[in-house]
Amino acid sequence: MSSSNKILTFTSLENIPNIKIGDNLSEILINSLNNQSIKLQDGDVIVLAQKIVSKTEGRLVNYSQIIPSKEAVKLARITQKDARFIELVLCESKKVIRAKNNTLIVEHKNGFICANAGIDHSNVVQVGEDSENWVLLLPEDADKSAKGIRMRLQEYYRVRVGVLIIDSHGRAWRNGTVGITIGLSGLPGVVDLRGQEDLFGFRLKITTVGAADELAAGASLLMGQAAEGTPCIHVRGFPYELQEAALAELIRPEELDLFR
Amino acid sequence: MSSSNKILTFTSLENIPNIKIGDNLSEILINSLNNQSIKLQDGDVIVLAQKIVSKTEGRLVNYSQIIPSKEAVKLARITQKDARFIELVLCESKKVIRAKNNTLIVEHKNGFICANAGIDHSNVVQVGEDSENWVLLLPEDADKSAKGIRMRLQEYYRVRVGVLIIDSHGRAWRNGTVGITIGLSGLPGVVDLRGQEDLFGFRLKITTVGAADELAAGASLLMGQAAEGTPCIHVRGFPYELQEAALAELIRPEELDLFR
Image (cartoon, rainbow over all chains, first blue to last red; front, side, top):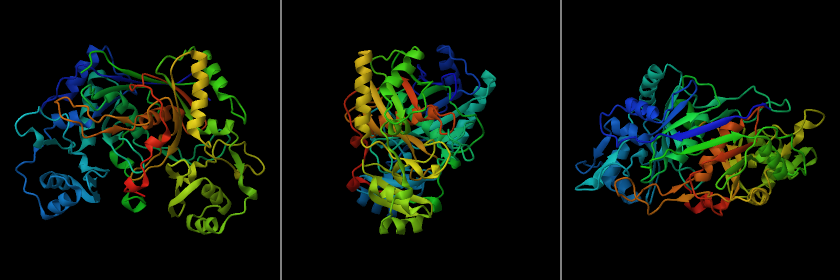
């Protein structure tokens, strides 16, 4: 057992403005960090809600003019959702996993399984004319988004950091959403403990830890889902070594998955 | 947006001795907290690895003398596991969910879905004669275990706290285990945000957050799985109001679950 205690701290960044298309998120983060007198250190991680990344990347879509496909119309009947919205979901997906009243679970283009391809309506645009039809798609390539932000932060602070982009997903078997990784750069998605021994010298049975998803869930606690939302979280004390990684390592291949 | 930043801090408790049957975990926690000069405050949460709770409760079992049932023998053939071990898993379970080479996913007696009914072999006993056959069952009723510890901590510190007992579970669709709630007392399992509005006045679509599971995942990061394990974590800054709760609120009823 280690002799000094370990501390992991999540701090919400304040004064993040309402994000608009084309905003430079890295500079917004640097401003906010400086305002809070947080100087990034080696090993720190910045966790970002998907929503603000998507907004800067212009992923806002109005679906009122979309012509739904036959499949979308069929799924709309099953799920009781708007066929034009479903068409958008299908465009963002590889495969429909489950469709039922009020629920559409898909495999997103980027590999993860989630409801509605992560397309979201809340916190998108001001209430007004046609505002009900505006939605926000996930970032096109959240690993790439994370990497761009990380490179700028590393350049500015001259340290090695990680950037994690998260969303809130429902889960099989359990109630309640949890924060989960949809893109990352510079921190491990999965940490492989194979070969390590337990306290008594046995080989471990738990072999891989979803470290980035554990971090995503912890950070999500501070983000909130409603009006008090704070979409950027600074993390100090992430206990695993930073390394190059990709979302793909967190995705179980279909042929090894018992629950699709 | 709130004007002051929010901070969530996880601190590992050190000098937790190697736990034995009958140890008083509350007193061990109080000693460790005092040694680290942590005085519990209203709203703090203590997160405990299942393993130390199970050990104090004497949930160690040696399966070498168990006579496996027919079903256990059949499942042992499918999963390539020891039939006596499988028999133990069945005794701890309501239902087998999936059985495949090297994998046995069940619904635990207490309602959650996990591999091997959470029965674990690592960190259980010293390597020695017959040590391979000693395993550790989950606490009989982890909500009750959490409540007992919480009551003692509240009495000692005269504050309102939560106690969360967690394990590491694999997940559908994704690689890597994450820390997850198996019992709790005094903090919400699920937080219901229905009726709240987003930044722009829309009703939220995400309606319930698995707050205890997000906390479990964050705390799990600091626990480690191998020899450096620190099974007790102090949390300050949990952002939701403490309340009476039970594991059951985190379990999706079978009839509403699309993935069993």
